[in-house]
Length: 423
Image (cartoon, rainbow, N blue to C red; front, side, top):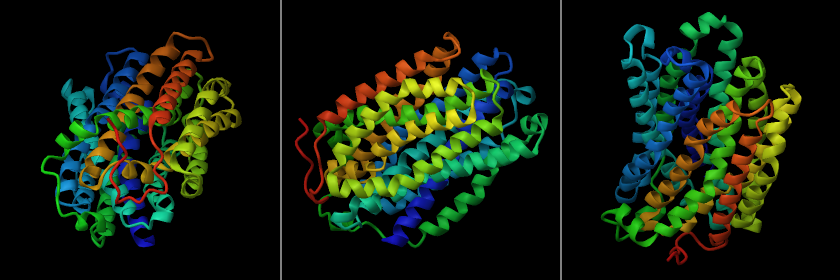
């Protein structure tokens, strides 16, 4: 289990590195390089628009790779998704700017971002299911949390490279070529991930299935549509909070508050370190107290903390910004640490890869794709303290709280049992 969990963590970390490095670049440099004819705010909005395309592609990737995961096995999905995401990320680092090839530059950026999202949409389902379906029932929450640590590790890798380059290079050097280096690093990371995953064995739950779904998506839509919609709505707050902290606040702090890139990245990364470190502990609590109670607790905490978070951010003081980010990410991890066990337990084995992945990635569209765009627009028309952003995030949290309240508890139901009735 330790070897399997470590390989799943490493793979998700690499794929989320690819995804996050784009978000950081969008917040810092992509606007002026690829949309130079726009105003600074419009350029940032356009860059975040290409960022959002990755989220729109993720449910499509969940359908595509989920089909093969339910038909052919979880393991092949991990290899194919890693190859696609890694190759498209390296290609982003090679795209010439608008000044070199004109409108073709943002079009290429859009296509490659779509392919990134397509690969990541398949990654999560395969990695989490392979771990969850190997894990003993009494410790499924703990072992399934390892892939959930991957996003934190990927974010720290992506922003660590960006931070080092930002500190070592002048602004002109960073804008000219420095921002491309993290995208090229993705190629080496992808090769390492493929080597780690080459020794993984197929899920025993998949091998035990006698009857595989012919068209998994059709079964999910017909029999589990309500469950998919509830999980997507429930997870939207986690995405909204995470990308408000890691993407929108980075752009807001550097452009509106005049805080340096290094200081902003350091504050965000410190909060993410704490969040990642606490993930296994929170998941272990879910093995004892249940998945749903922790999700309800985290969602409530998010609703209560969004206004204090934007107020602390608006101070521009590093320590206060860190505290704001930390409170938000603690609420986030209380929900998302348990999802590696919770979502697979909600779906029956024959459509689990498709159902869990589609629900998870639809939540990304609702919460992750829209949040940087909406928050940027709201902050532009507000005062120094972006209260409108706080109101938006609080509203998303209350919506997700209602969805979580309608979902059933799954612990200690064995993972082999059919899903609860979903209408």
